[in-house]
Length: 371
Ligand SMILES: [Zn+2]
Image (tube, rainbow, N blue to C red; front, side):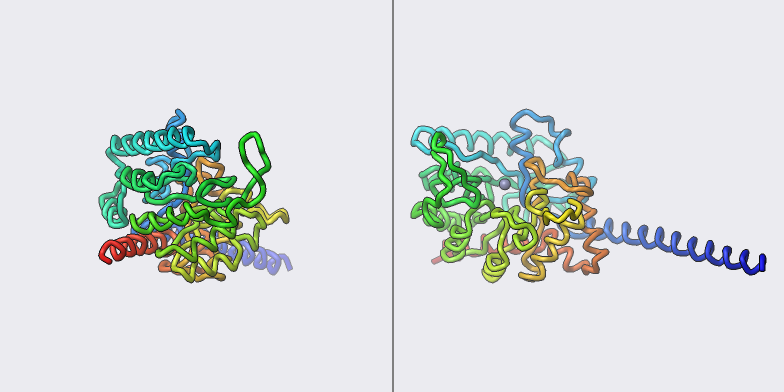
């Protein structure tokens, strides 16, 4: 009897050991597959507030995104947004604001230019070349069309300084469009009511001007009515640079399945974000990389794998357990692999989709110029 028990225990131990070491081996193999894919594919984060934090005086080393963390995480390209919250809309404020915006774009651009291991991308082809050269790629952007004020010439002014998308609003309405999140604050001139029921007449001109220049229209932060208007009039595909799925987290900043489908039908992309308030299901599900991938897979299931990507909102509140800086983005890749995603689909998610959209936006501009 004792022999039987001993043999049984030995067999259990052996099985446990095999499972354990087999597990270790498969984890090692998975890590190798993650590293190898990150070396090969282009990875893009379409939204960070890193630039504005840096310009406010935070040390670059202390931020969730910097060029060392990008290298560590295998993150190739980041859109660095100059952000400004909604404020007063009188003429003198708007003129000063446009000058402030120019100053911020120039200063962050010069900072990138001063770093040998980084380079700015002005066009999608630059992203591909900079990746090959092994450098970190920085793309400038603007978060809040408020900075355009009511002067259409500011769109080209900011484009010429490197800004490659404009998020049409932040929280609260501006002269371009209505926002998704609005507050009643008469002192600041804010109202929770829609002001334009979508795009304003000036906002329509701004979208046309962005199409003409080859600048990406970003509808994150805007109201559903605004998204509908932009979809109707934009000559080019559009993006949501940092929004998640409203079906999983019912926040007005997130996108309904209907809008996700419409953005995809126009060739655009939804860059799922990791801000906790836009991923939380409210049922106690841990706020981690798995929950994030639930949003990614939901958008994929609704719109197709060609229409989902990554927009962290790092240094603007973005970050979840397991993905708290640019250094940790491989954990998303690992989780998608565990869920059975092919390398091809992961490549689309990480960079293929957003680069396709950016190229299409530039192709539309070239076509408009030739007409
Ligand atoms: Zn934002």
